[in-house]
Length: 207
Ligand SMILES: C[S@@+](CC[C@H](N)C(=O)[O-])C[C@H]1O[C@@H](n2cnc3c(N)ncnc32)[C@H](O)[C@@H]1O
Image 1 (cartoon, rainbow, N blue to C red):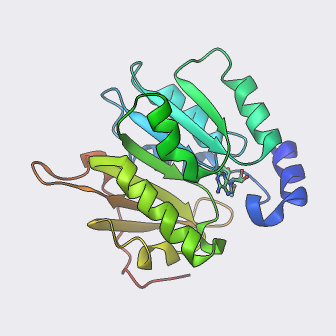
Image 2 (cartoon, rainbow, N blue to C red):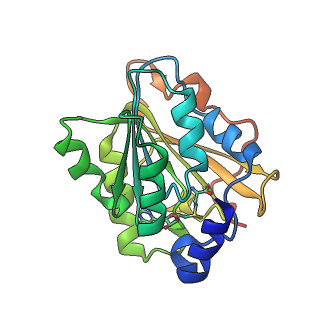
């Protein structure tokens, strides 16, 4: 699997943006930000070879749906092969920006979680703002947008979300900021209890 990852990095370095997949420790940390006790709709941007997707599919409630948005054709084919026997996991070979259309196509109103592994920091500002807006609009009140990135620059752009908390996670090569942005549920406060990270990092803190 890592061989495929390295090959795809060599072919599309700016899109893949990493030479190895996320560590097991990072995958577990990210999954701990989600509450899997109920059926959930979860979208993942940039699953790559599927290291987070496999963990989410393993943990999620049987009534859940996991939508994977992957631009790279080889990764997409490989993901389809991995999840061929699991109808709860659906692979979209395309841009993360297709999320609203793909939800509508399936008759799904909103997501509980959007997880992103795409290199947001190198998207041009207009694309970044447009994707953040689509993401925010697609998340149900009380839901979260979770990202892991080498820098924490997205915090200054993701101002649509009413609340965001970051931790700097060292057990990955390279270390990553893991940030949970919450869409406020006015009835119950923000997010799920599982979405509360350990360490706070100031909003303007960029690596
Ligand atoms: C840094 S890799 C992360 C892979 C994996 N999630 C992990 O943690 O190991 C980024 C992935 O995002 C994909 N990607 C980049 N831009 C994308 C976009 N706009 N929509 C969907 N996927 C994208 C790349 O093809 C690549 O697989």
